[in-house]
View 1 (cartoon, rainbow, N blue to C red):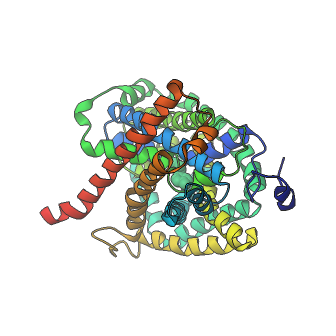
View 2: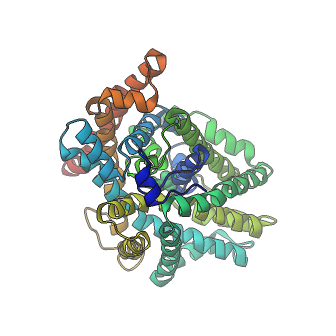
View 3: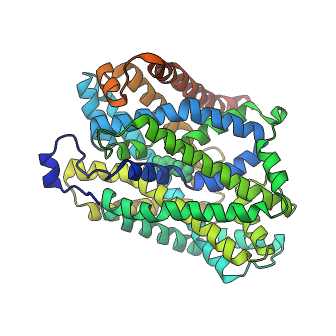
Length: 470
Ligand code: PFF
C-alpha cells in the first residue's frame, strides 16, 4: 500500500497532505464506498415504492446522468486541483482564479452538512447493526407482521438501546478513520466493498427464486407516469445527490487524494454505475420479497426495517440471509460514514496540524452527542418540534438534504463553469475541443446548475411560502 508520509509528501509536489490513493481502482472503491450506503439500500427502494416504481426510477436515472455525474466530476476535479480539505481546496482555487474568498463557503457547507448528516446517519446505521443481531438470534423466525412491527416500534421507543447501537457504530467509524484516510480507508474498503457485492449477488439469487420476481421487476421497470407528481421529480433529484454523496465535501475530500494521471471522467462514470447498480439491485432484491409475501411496497421508511426482516423470517434459511442482508447494509453505511467525517478531519489536520486520531475521537464525540438528539426524536422527544412539525431528526435531515445540499451543488457547478480558469478545467479533465468538451460544457454550465437551482427554489417555496397559504 502506497501510503505517503508527510516528509515524502513535502518532497513530492502535487500530492495531498493526507496521502494518496495507491491506485485508480482504490479511488473507485473509496468513492463507491462513500456513494453506496443507506441511501441505496434503505432509502431508494422505499422512495421508489412510494413514488410509483418505474416512472420514478427513470427520472432518478436521468438525474444521475445529467446532474449527478457532472457535479461529481466537478467535485473530484476541485479536490484534485486544490489538493486539500474542501475548505483548503476551495481557498486555493479561488486564489488561483483571483476570485473572492467567499467560495470557501462551498467547503464549509460540505463540512457542515457532512457532520450533521453523520449524526443521524449513525443512528439509522445503528438500527441496521441491531437487526444483524436480531436476525442472527432467530427471533424473527416465522414472525407475524404484528410481531415485526412491534419489535421495530419497541426498539425505536427505547432510547438506551438506540443509543447503544448508535455508539457502537460511531466507535467503529472513528476507529477506522483514525488510522488515516488512505491507510484506514483502503484497508476497510478493500474488504467491505467486494464483500458487499458478493452479499448482494447472493441475495439477488435468493430473491429471484422467491416467486415474486416478475412482479418486483415489473414494479421497478414498468412505467406508470400517472403516479409521478412534481414532488416525485424533486425527490428523485434529491436522492440522486444524496446517493452519490454530492455537495457534502466527501467526494471533494477524496478527490484530493487522486493521482494526477487518473482520468476523472471514466473513474466517476464507473462510480456512478456501481452506485446505481447497487440501488437497482437492492430494489430488485427487496421488491420480489415484498410481493411474494403480500407486503406493501409503499410502506415508507419501515420498508427495510419491518417488512424485510419479516419476509426473511418467513423464509427457509431466512436467518442466514437476513443476517447477511443487514451485515451488507451496515458495511455500506460504515464506508459512507467514513466519508462524511473525512472532510472535517482533513480540514482540522491541515489547518491546525492536529493529530488525526485525537481529532477523529473528539469530532466523533461531538457528532455522537448531536446524534443523541436524533435518538430521542424517536421516543422521548417525539413531540418536541424544532421547526414547524419537524422533530430534531427530521429538522437536521431537512436542512441538510433540502437546503445545504442543493445550495452546495449549485455553487460547485457555478464555480467550475464560470469562475475557475478554463486552463485548470481543461488540464484536469483532458479537454481539447470536440464532442466531449461540448457535452461537458452544456451539462456543467446549463443543465446541472439550472436543474438543481429549480429544486432549491421549489424547496424554498414549499418551505417558506406554502405554509402561509394553508
Ligand atoms: N451516499 C450515501 C448513501 O447513499 O447512503 C450517503 C452519503 C455519504 C451522503 C457521504 C453524503 C456523503 F457525503
